[in-house]
Image (cartoon, rainbow, N blue to C red; front, side, top):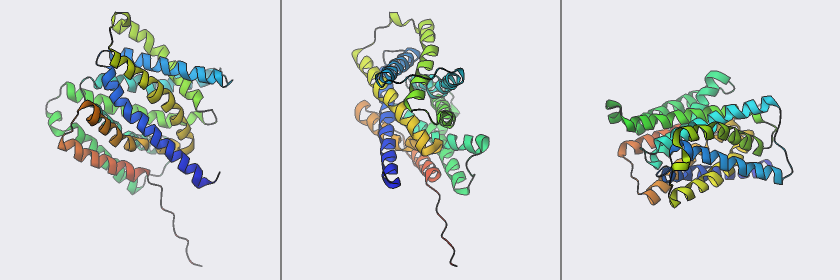
Length: 301
């Protein structure tokens, strides 16, 4: 298989991942209508983790057993599921799914900041600085100047989604530690590790045996677990290996129109004009950052 065909396949997977995660915001919005956020996330990670574990056994494979790998799985779980899943699920009780998708689109910006300021494996170019600046300005516009004047639940929810975005960025960078592993291994290992943390928390906080979730919420939870978590995580860890940490997060701007469109079509959501301007800034910033560098023309001899 030539390089062009391989890249086309990876970009196709990037689009699939964008669609799966773009739909997740609507699934979460429906799920938290009758299922508390912590319990929703605990069930999401458990169902997805067990499903991937079953696939591993079906393929005749075994999860790693060394302590270091499982320590990495635990760290990845905190960055990629426990913290961001819970923050987003809590926030979507007060925030539209479309707005959550837009705010979450800043993941590549924070991924670049982490790599440039901490890991330092990417050059800090003027073009990327422009992308970071445009993206951060866009985030502020999406939240809205008016919201900053009256700190309340809406602003707290929006900031929680931004915090989740920072977690996702850290997870993309940390995911480089799993190079050489079949992508299903870190996907399953991190989800199972997350479930170990979240299930006791759900039992202590929500007393899930007392809940009466609606059929719509249960179906949304199942779709969220199987498609937007189990399948999406396998694709995600593959792309971290093939496209790199910043390249894998490029799906963030692809999932924005998908997430917003789903929220508008199925939930009847609307966005303010300020959010529209912010979206344009975020898209410009992220696209600018993720474009491949131009090749320098060879000098004539």
